[in-house]
Image 1: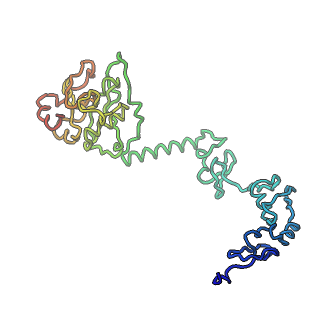
Image 2 (image 1 turned 90 degrees about the horizontal axis):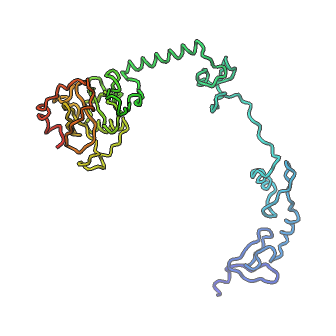
Length: 340
């Protein structure tokens, strides 16, 4: 062990003086100590007694209460600061609320460029300065308010006319159900014909195809006069139409021979012939199967590729006959248009 004679230090304790290869140094008296005498009490540290004699329990200058320390040598300033941050001081002075003027509209904190309302005498920002924009207690139906509302309605109509956009109507107003004793009649007219789907606002007038649509008999919904885009396929029109009238459509889960499948049919006299879902309205118009306001489509349940004969009490009595009502015209395009 002679080669390690200079490694480590001797313990400074009076009764020990043992060489320790990993000695400890006291933080207060700076003595070198071994593992057994490293604690303050084990080597009778003189500095710790001086620290304990000088250490006093601080008193909060706000609430006049003594504050305990985590250890005797902890700084008093740190103790008082922790006492305030933890909310233990009950008499701590609370910050005063700012008297800065802000917008009186609920939820608005704007404090710049405030204007006084002449009716309620409150201050509002530029966004809520008008009576219509804030809950004005003196809000009345004055002449200025009436003229302003009329002006807004005219501006909205100008935008509709400029961009050829029709206002969105509530579809529930057109969906009318009937009782067994009620007569089958159209819920709307050609002037209020509607369609469904996200493309209706961007649909050009030249691409619209107007048709009469009968809905399933079990739904007990009156028929509608609707229009579709020539670019739409029969399958897209079927899905969009079922969503529009809130009819359950589970074609993706049902087999082709299921009686619950929804199909879109072409009406020929009192017989309906299923249309292929992949065919488009443009191809039907090109082949003169569909003609504007003269063609009737039927949304009904049944297996794919099977025609049906409708009951006499299902159709509107005064419906005009289709120009493509002869069976020869239907058979001419049966291979292209009708499901096989």
